[in-house]
Length: 320
Image (tube, rainbow, N blue to C red; front, side, top):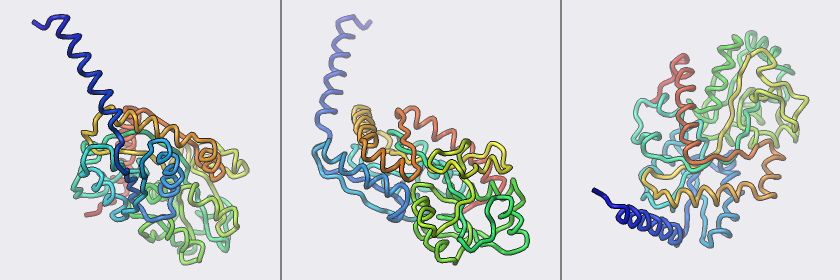
């Protein structure tokens, strides 16, 4: 039988171990792995918070772009990294939740090999077209797509913007040809250049090009209108009832990372993303700061995985 004294001793030992882990971390440089090319939403946020983290934690914080396989290359790198909190993943959590449904072969299991730390920001997808496209709303774009071949740029096959486009296509009867890219920045540039006519992409990376007049905005994928672009109707308002999609930037670490480190990292990331200048910068580009506990993020991941699995199955999208 365990005595009360033994229980108190065990509790004290656990508290001491927890305090020790918290105080010892971090003691060396930290790497933020962004599994996409530079210029996308995750990259923008990683670079926005890296200085705040470095200043708060008193260590060097390096942002590394490890693009490939729709974010899976960088995600695998973190999943297989030492579970010590010195290498973490900053990515579109929703896109990562889609991967198990799209890829027939994954060398890691996001649900088992990665642990959520916190969400950082949400930005809806914007439905945009090249300014030369003779459509000013979703209805006109759908009608045009039935009379003229339209190239729809996607940041990656099976990614969240691609599946958002598929969902809109299926709901409206639109017809377009998907053109895959290796990242959102390249997809945006080709749509600006007229090589592709239509795309959906995260507002954070896309809205500056709407402001400059290089892209024409037709709809936003949020359930309700956004104050920043209040005159732009949502896709739901334009006939796709209940439609909502977007990019959810968040942080994950290798499964097995000590809980005290995860909790400390959660607190530091939330403090960094809520810094007034970072929050203002993101808000000015259409990104809303959204934070979560590790448990809340894990729950969100599982919900997104189930939601998009249905869309993937309906569209019959499979990649090796």
